[in-house]
Length: 267
Image (cartoon, rainbow, N blue to C red):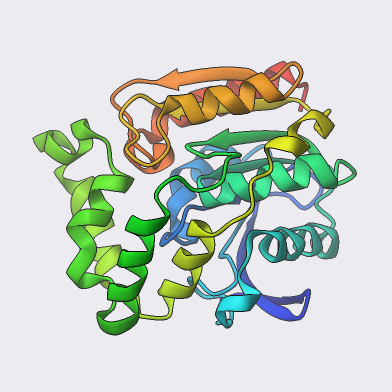
């Protein structure tokens, strides 16, 4: 397990592919870890340097108190990771929580980012604060297991929840959620109470691809559309039969979108 000291914490990461190749950095969703983008790493490591990492407070990265897990701090962690590993200028791919970070980096640190792909995310303040705070309370007291079914609904689309052909995906995500400990409540709280970045979108000048899932119960497509409307030149893709975690539910379709984005941006 590779750990690196950045921004006053330790971040767990995987670094694959040639160190001389252009870099793609993958930033995962809440509750997930580096394995979220495993199939993307397999698809792209032959031609790119592929870096996946766990957010502070999650996965193999160092734990942290609630007041050190806000989105701005996580974005600063990621900027420091990119600088320390020499990944600039990278293509930055973020899903949900990773998308919050992608937006902040694209707006604030264009020196680090060549382009950004933002999947199942939002630039708005959280609209479900009360519901998320209730989940936080349960996780703090009993871990994630009592609310696994609720979280599955927010993570997976209707097709993934019901299609027998996607049973393995449901089982994988369920097993992952059941393993999460009460301290994950701190990260969930920070998602619920994050600051919006809608007013920063006009500062983004790098190429941006925004991807929505038509069955996303957490951030439906209108959240993605508002991001597109706020960024000059941003492109939009709507994935069908897809919920909130695109790379997990439809990895091959995500790989195809990424290949097109990389070609379009000359990366």
